[in-house]
Length: 66
Image (cartoon, rainbow, N blue to C red):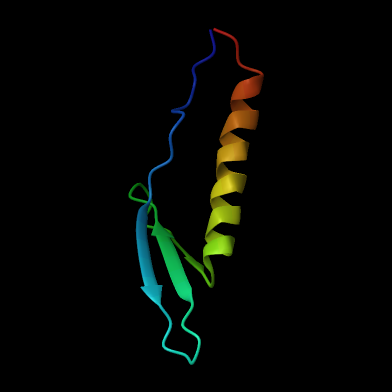
């Protein structure tokens, strides 16, 4: 019998605007499980990271049968 890992990801999201001539949104994610923080210079970078993480969870679960 194969056990499945949880099919969810949890992060604390922080968003703020940079203080430049053309303010851009910055972001950070913090894992509540490990305390690890990941910073992002743009929302596109944040979305790319989240897409990669959710794809990895989906790919890992593809081969598991109950």
